[in-house]
Length: 218
View 1 (tube, rainbow, N blue to C red):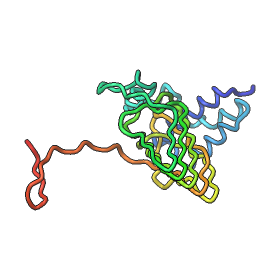
View 2 (cartoon, rainbow, N blue to C red):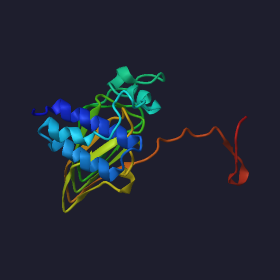
View 3 (spheres, rainbow, N blue to C red):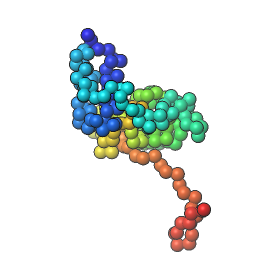
View 4 (cartoon, rainbow, N blue to C red):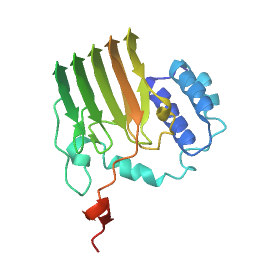
């Protein structure tokens, strides 16, 4: 029987869980994921997860619940309060734009930088959907995207006398339940940089003393 898109996505989800649990390395994961999305029948899909435990036998990771609280826009915000909704686009023409802190990443976001630059920081953001697509157009400009560890990132952009720089930092394992970020678009005489960084830690409440020393308040 021919497989549907939903069947392929279920297999892909099991593969993502398996790589997050350490059952598959990144090379095996990428090979099986590509095979899953190109499979046409159940006979082609079945061997991809035959040596993996069934979904019921695999205990959900603790991080899955934390990601669920951040997916679905403001309704999925944490107890610290809902994140403000943001527009679905950002444009910098001989200027700059910035999206960081608590904001909601829409399912489709467009970013344009022409003779300018932009920064999209997703480390503290909520996500309107399980999968979001960020389309970047950088013409003689640059766009930087920062995602937290555990998020699956798929960079598909095209560079013409420019480039989409994924960096070695993207070699992180996606966590169960984490959102998937697809970055596509065009960089012409410009660049789009995608990197993974830990969320910022809150600054301490220390006071500076003479000589540059810092004293923490107790």
